[in-house]
Image 1 (cartoon, helix red, strand yellow):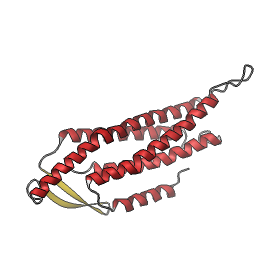
Image 2 (tube, rainbow, N blue to C red; image 1 turned 120 degrees about the vertical axis):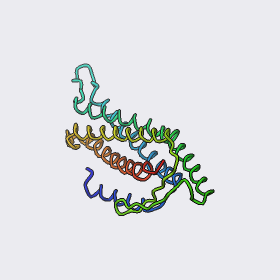
Image 3 (tube, rainbow, N blue to C red; image 1 turned 30 degrees about the horizontal axis):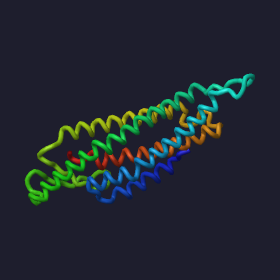
Image 4 (cartoon, rainbow, N blue to C red; image 1 turned 135 degrees about the vertical axis):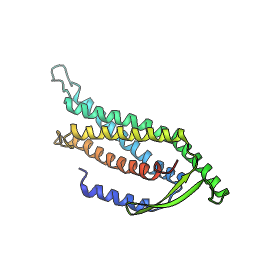
Length: 214
């Protein structure tokens, strides 16, 4: 089970990592390489265990053997995770194929313009203290409405992912429902590790990437 100590360790690790200063392209590369492939692998492994569990609990082994039927509540938990995993796959594809390239292009344009003007007209800079860390808040005269809309969509999808996670937690009684089943306990454990990683991932996008002045 994920403990408060494990969550604190993850947050400490994230705090140490975010002390580094990343450009937009560097931060995007960091997010994609650090989270996307790893989380898709986690999700695939969990789904494989869930598929095997469902197969074993929804089949009969012989004509005179009683057919096993999976608990309806476990089915609901699995369906929530299936929905979450499908949505996340699409979310990552959208980020990597559409939104992140737009961010890089926007960054390249604004950085190029600011270099040419020696960071003069069109941009003001100020340091803002957020949670003990200094961020450089950049204010550009022009904004990209299309990119802002895409970021808002991504944030909405983050919220939908969190809703799935909270529903899984509720349905599973905080991962305690039928947890004496060793196979189910293993699935719960892997879900918790995956969700902790997704939480760190989401915070880095929303606090470091999406909050930039697009």
